[in-house]
Length: 310
Length: 249
Image 1 (cartoon, each protein chain N blue to C red):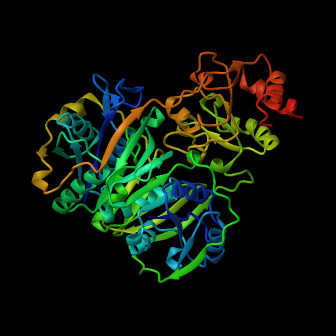
Image 2: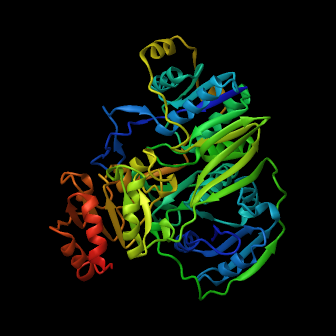
Image 3: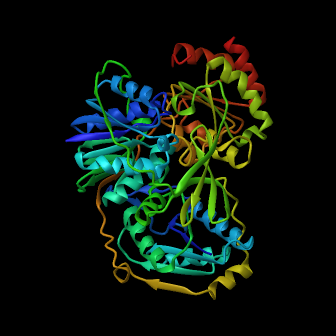
């Protein structure tokens, strides 16, 4: 039994999601190999070889892997899929985009967003926005799995010394082309990797009002997030969204400001270590999951909190 | 140009589902069912493309129990021209649905298939990508903008950390994200009109597709409960608790 992890990377470095996926792969019971399909991705491949517990890194390098187009990466995975009992990718925009193509071509089911490995063929995954946890068993010859990062600790990024093998890249599928990217510029940590998150909801009232959260996020070195209601209202960009249809996060400290706590939002943050809720409505569902709640006007409380933090 | 829009009947967005006491699944008896919200966005997008004169026909497709006909009628009330139901009592998995859709795409020959990025019941986020692979078509998932012109579709995608734009040759697959559009309010006259639109019913066997599930659900359980904490009177108490009790700052 050998498990293959599809590395998420930007050619220069690995994304943290890859480390969590390696942990899940190791729990499937056999050796772990990592595929780095990229363009001039030597640095990312070198980083993969350092991950503790990785036996082999397979590198496929071609210009048309530069932007992670699903069609091309999936073909590269399929080219080597025959050697593996498990194929795993992070359940991020990157992994979710690629892996179902692999599963369909292998004619196997995909098991999405697992949070636990019970045995090499049995996995736990949340359904209905996390309101239920399903335990599913696969009888397929290859288990194709996406991994929810918050369910698994990150593998150590150093300490390993995996062999690296370079393989020939598959041909460019050529049906899709990368046009461009607008990366939100931010000095803040990435939402899914942040230790502290400050999130705002519909209670903020406007996009302008989110500025009041910035000093708080600055003080705590926090990432900024939002509820779907705030995204729907156009206050902030969609990639801030925490919840069932956005990002799943589990920081040490999650501060929910003006967020009522809809089921779909709770699904994205209830595994946080400590949750603080600031809301003017004492009946808001967010208080049912918060460790510490303050009832009051966020426009008064947030500046007070910033001052108190010194 | 024809567009195919698959739609799924799911437990309504506002319903909080309960796990059955025997842990075999969630209780959906007597629960309000609706069209998957992301699929509604897909139907709206296809309808807007038709209204803009870029598309000539919008065909809504569903698979599942006979009540899915209601979901198809909703799609036709938004603007789909006709509906196709692949009727089956078998619990469908994304791979089975993708195979059914491939068979229908082979028959209908659409140039574009727009699907929701995920269904809010099983949260799989697989069907569009699987269908693209089976058809050998390119895909743009999690779309927030779709521009159809000159034999290609240019799609802006919601990815981690920002937006990404791809250009796909047609035929192609697009899956919708939340901000692609805001589906219209369905009016009574359009609901009445939708009742007269053609709706064909077929079966997986007629399409030569085996939809037997591949995964066995051993158990469905309640998630671990998080207990409510305490309400603190002021910000000073909060900061003290975070420092000394939770030790997170």
